[in-house]
Image (cartoon, rainbow, N blue to C red):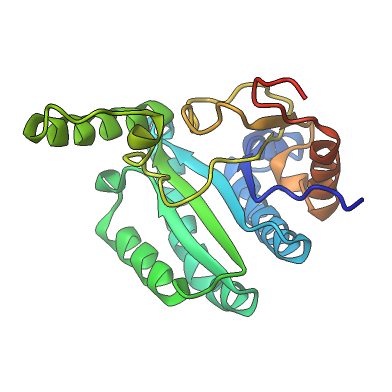
Length: 233
């Protein structure tokens, strides 16, 4: 029997700072090496037939980091988007950013929109980058949008699927598998609604060291899971 391949794999990319510190390097070197891991995992997902790969690149809470590091990360994101265009196009990867765009600089927003437009017709894999994102923010903005509509139509009934349609991830399926690197075992305010029945996989591997073989190991573990969604089989 063929192994079950998750349609949507999501990754909390953790450990860049520790990776750099262990080598006596500046934290920014860990972020630079982490970009290589994103590229490797994206290309491996294409080979394996995964349809959606999402990565938690920068949380709302990360704005509280030292200003110099935040500035570097934003510039790195913009630079990477320009440099990775050919790789995305060659692999048929659609690029999408999810998060609170109101906090992003106009130059970065322009780079995001440009890459989204150029890759919009690619349909092999969708790469979703969560940027300036928080699960609580997502639920709150969805609730506000829904409340505004209900005010005009108070008799309307609302179910789970109705609410989910207002989340920033409404266009994508919920994650089947969530991977977190570096040994931490929490979801850090990431897709709180969407991961209700997601399978979690935690690894001690630091994100800059996470490559194709580590992704395959996670997917092999996923294939052994029995997903019952609260039911009995």
